[in-house]
Length: 308
Ligand code: UTP
Image (cartoon, rainbow, N blue to C red; front, side, top):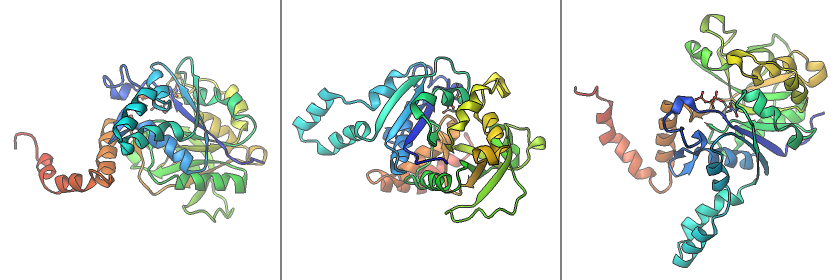
């Protein structure tokens, strides 16, 4: 059986080419969303779901990530001397969140390869994977639910969302199994997965259920990844390894997809990044009221065609 989920792996070693030149010298996970780097939301989500041990798989320019989750004694001393308790608490929050470990991927050979690097750290239990550039601000509710489904069923669990059919070529897409197996008891719909395919053209896509960046995986995935060769784009794809787990429900528990209805932002994508900033700014306790007022009034004019 799967066992309790106590560890999360956060792959953060991608090249971030969609956000160049901003990501030339800075990992995309360090781009700020309102008042903290994107990666802090991801670690907060893991912690909110009950996970205290986080392994970040990093690549080039990793130093800012490590620095962010480390203490900065002189900054803390200055803020303490000034009596600025609110900022002191904000600075300390990042390094007090979780037990964060780091590992270099070596070469960005793909998401599957990044996850495989975590094998030794994870050991023989099920574990969570949170993509470091995906933000889901739900207080860890979805991940906690995925963990509960993994513990209850022994399956690997992936989060999916319905996407417009023409966008299937940007995602891993699942084929739901035709089964009368009862998969209920979770907050959101669950679907047994028959197979998965990475970034299919819309005409080849078996459904519009797209994998988003949250997974709770059985440790057997490591053995599968070890023999998974390069797939789409020449990269070792996690989707290809999941395909093998999905095909073997008797041996490895198979794969169950949870259909998440909430919002999710891919901060490696410029438009989604801006939307994440606007939505989270509008909810922010300090600047939220002013942002909402600005959106209702001045921002409307920005919707006009330039020069109109
Ligand atoms: P993406 O598909 O977003 O690729 O990776 P990318 O290289 O990061 O960004 P673009 O497409 O060039 O803009 C999905 C996730 O997998 C991680 C990324 O950090 C991201 O969290 N990843 C990808 C790795 O950790 N290593 C890899 O070799 C590839």
